[in-house]
Image (cartoon, rainbow, N blue to C red; front, side):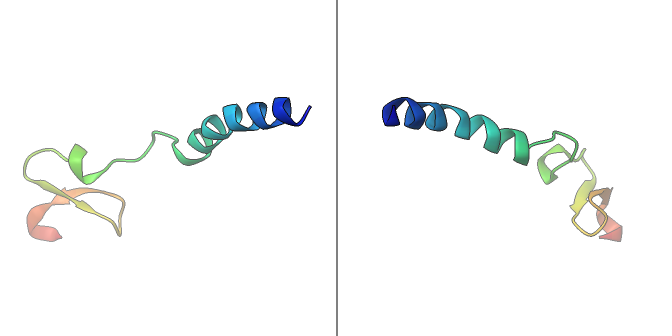
Amino acid sequence: MKTVLLATLLTLTPALAFAAGCNGSHDTAASCPSGLTWDAKTGSCVDQASS
């Protein structure tokens, strides 16, 4: 019984961690177009001159 419980827990843990931490709705510095830079304060890409 303990083995089955442990196997279930180890199988579900990565899926739960991924679901909790990755909603896919945020940009990153790598996704800013050329001429723009990531502004962590606003959470978006901005002109390089204004950062």
